[in-house]
Image (tube, rainbow, N blue to C red; front, top):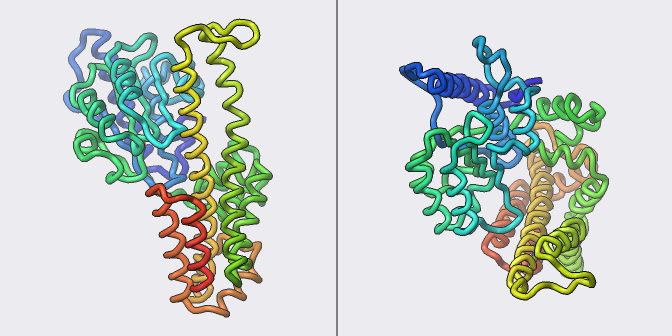
Length: 401
């Protein structure tokens, strides 16, 4: 397997990146041998990968980063860099390559301080690899100030530094930054392609892989999680029962509370898995004495860590709620497909009887209003409306139709 095999349903993008990686290799080789650089090159110093959730933006950026660090002898013989098995490819993909920095955030935003640290690193020459590669998986979470800090580095990059930015859409990135990047758009992978990669790469049973790929409509990450996490399957099943529980006001309020509580439980579980170890590691690094007594002058550092953990918990809750709302949208999308009598493949075939009953008992206009209510709830959560208030408004709107 090469690094390009992980680009599910992105053949055109893969071809463009492979050509750029080949030209990047030629540029480095020319510098090393004092040969003249190629007359034309498909390689550039800044790239922006956009596409819908689940399209594989981060996976694509990582694959390209690995290809840029590829040390396989085959590439020197005219082969495409990105063999997948050399030390450069392997360490880049697992995140341990000294010259590949992968930045993701568990918080709601990326601030100026973190971005300045990235910019300083970007000025360094490669330590062991062929390029200094910065993969920013959440470029859409840069604050305006952080974006302005990044702009300077993208405008005047170091000779062998490459920025790989990922965001849902062009509008999620500052115009001044996106205008200086080569833009590649990824598409939602076909359901069959997602099922195939789950079987081939993750060892999922074909029937299960097909079911979860169809349920998530080609979202690779969510499909893998549904296939491997029993809790995720249970939560999704509970969400899809919500339309049957909103027959009165009491049912609406109870369903909303349970949805928010489930998201809070997700956040609590993540906190249990990460916060304790993170806190202990920080105390050890700061030289905590036996019994937990902290040295003087470290209270501010510990307070900063606690604040970061609180912000991460908030994002985890909102992300969990958003996933539930996406599942709810697919439910009503199936209802709408039945009402219009299309041959569109249903996402929730396990609920065929329920879908048929709701399709017969309501009109397409009602179903569209319900889908709009879900979209309005997602927008409210993005604007930091209190989760319970936003979800209660949504369930009441679903009941009213």
